[in-house]
Length: 262
Ligand SMILES: [Cu+2]
Image (cartoon, rainbow, N blue to C red; front, side, top):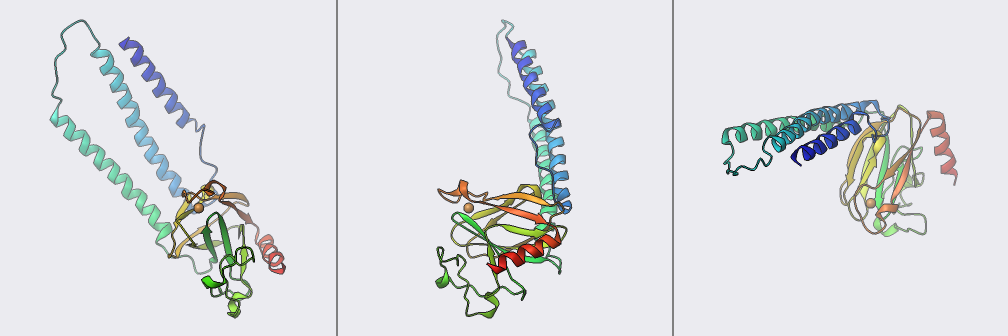
């Protein structure tokens, strides 16, 4: 019986390791070269924890078999304090080290300011849609005022048209960006906490009411990518998604022009 249990555990271990090593269920391909560090850090963590997992399971199998019921009287063990101190501190050092390495990569994206030539796009989450605002030809975002918010009247953000800078602002339900150009996202929320998530970019950031959170990215591959809301924000949360359209510079300019005409 003990031998069978040890064998089943080994089998589960091998199958689990195979699923990860063969990348059977894996991330979608990365579309932003500056984010490659995220994947590298993830792999490093996975390999280290994978090796520990393997040996821990092997140890478990050995102990199950070695101390199986042999018809003798069992005796109580108090454990080994020295060994416990060693592996607890080793685990702590290892994980704190990985956290620091990861923190460094995260900070590069979130705390560094955007390149000067970045295109600014204001992203506003609300139950249960995303709105994307472009500043229009004047390059300036117009004033917003809550009293002008009119969902059915096509002014979900409350643009104040008395402000000349607001008249050319473009508000869209999808987010178009030109390929290979830095984009600065100004993330806001109108009601509760939402989360802006683009898997292919390894980018996830909460949108918090009352805050303007800035982050930046550069997409390197043309295509259409989902932007789901990654924070449970209410009953319609699962319906809250939009798309990131990465297009050539030319197509992007056309897209801006075509939508401005409407
Ligand atoms: Cu949401």
